[in-house]
Length: 279
Image (tube, rainbow, N blue to C red; front, side):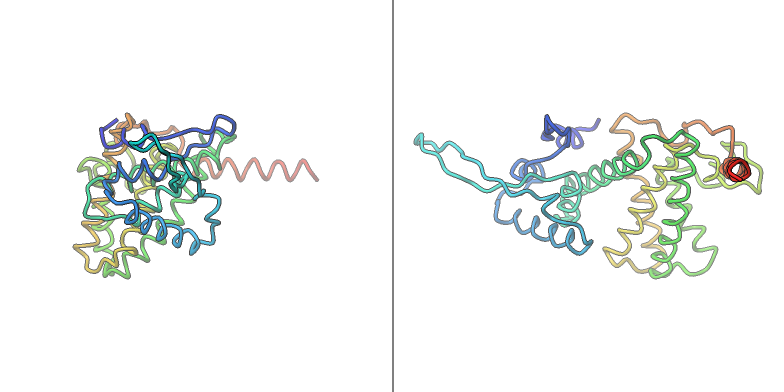
């Protein structure tokens, strides 16, 4: 794991009863290179507002706490602090000073960890095949939203969108294009690469899609070249994070024996048999 990523891991705390991870705002302030608490509080307030705008309770993610600190003259003083969930840290990073390199690292780290946890929470009892179907379905939905965001940025023609998509793949797959990935998987011309990915590879592409859409909308990116650059940047950051967390690069992940289409047909067949049996 890279040094910047270790910074966030090193200040992570875990509730011994619930096992829930959390971070203290005062410690996060130092890691994110904010020298003044009052300036960091402004970032936290923006993050709280973003949380409320998403119709999510801030009390579940931003817990007000106080601490007693020792002063030099042996006296003590009470100071305010916050216990932040992973999602709260993600929102703080999203509203931080984007000119700082560590903020970009924090955005990637907390976004990816949040996304992983969401998938883990939703898919704990599923088999690999069921996970593939679930993540592929979600990726299809988010690809539609990404296409809308790209269109609003100026990516209009089908060829332009193909180039835009390729930039995301090149960032995530270390320079490989969609055609290159297709060839590595030994697929036929009519087969889609997303239908021949395992759940881990699909999850990496889902993260790429969601974060690119968010970046384009958040930064109000305009122009084909800028949109392409944003997609490549997000893909590259996802790749770097996978590397720093010790994961397998997406192009080195195995291609499943069965495609998503095959799994869907098997699922429909099993459902039909179940309905016949119920009758």
